[in-house]
Image (cartoon, rainbow, N blue to C red; front, top):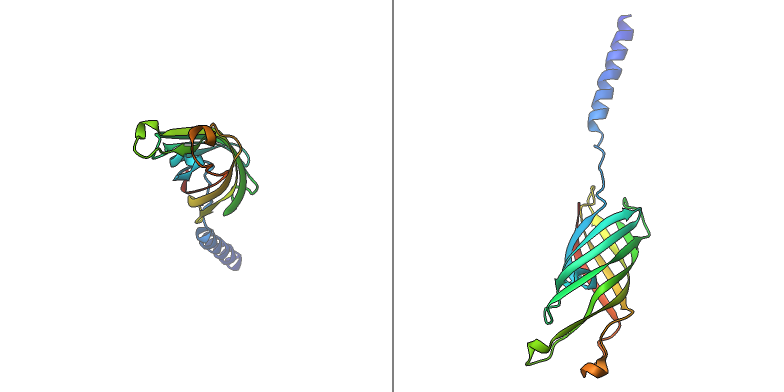
Length: 169
């Protein structure tokens, strides 16, 4: 009997030691806030992603075009990998400020233009809880209100990049 009690006590002791060494469960954050440069950030500003379905986020950004005032953006991002992955490739569609024109010598004439933008990129979140990270997008400007001939400027191109720092909440 003494041997059985000793065995039970040993098992209980070892179980408590092993249990105390196991890592606590980490709850991954589904939403994120970021600061960066590019169309999703309102050109130069901040962006928030709110999870609305598995692997699907609503995204909104507000910032400055620097030369022509306020910049904005709203859209969706679809991630090809689950939240638990460190590297999550994605595709996005946004509507917002995508072009700004600065007229040298007359800042009152500076203008910004908005339109539809399609992006392909990725988000890297690091650490055990994946709270901080970076994101990067290559964005195709599908439409814009800018007519280069009418404005008397060079065509600024259809491909842009975006990069930012993210914090999950």
